[in-house]
Image (cartoon, rainbow, N blue to C red; front, side, top):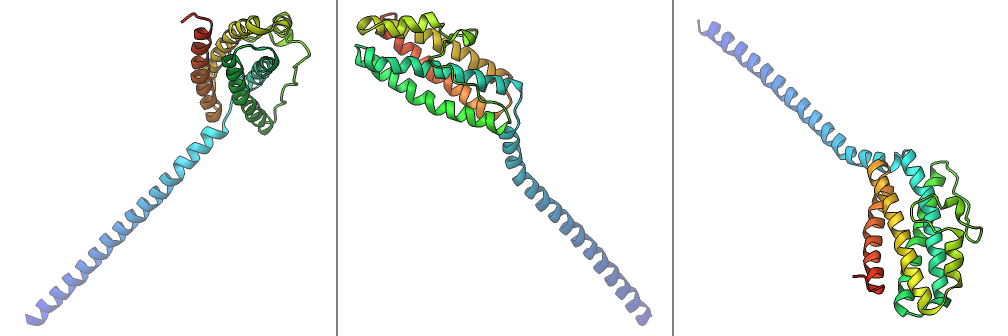
Length: 210
């Protein structure tokens, strides 16, 4: 009986050890799975970020192409202030606009190139009627009028035209925020809205409208 009991006890111990091994293996498997999940989740944000940065659609392309032309005209208008504006406030604002929008043109041109799209030709000095269908764009007549103005007259015309120009840019940027999929473009659009809204308020104060 003692021997029989010993065999039963030994069999039970072996069985228990086997169950324990299975439990440990299962836990190890789950741990490995969790680590894999953690690894997957750690790469998931970067994958999501890559997707957000890399994916673009037709709205992004249109935004970049049109805003490049829009910015180019704003820079052209701003450059006129150097020799025509009477107010230091107008000159400072013009320099700020030029300093912000020049680099943005380069950024958007880089996007188009990376997407295999053509960067629009620079139409500065070639007339603006082809692009005047974009919101807020000045016509050739508008630009000639601004170029012919000096002193306080220039300051007033510059503010009035640039307000209209900025309002058009904000409209374009809002469209990109709603319809675009390319993360950096949507971020730039948001920055355009914020910066140019503030500049519109500044120019309205310069005109005594607020």
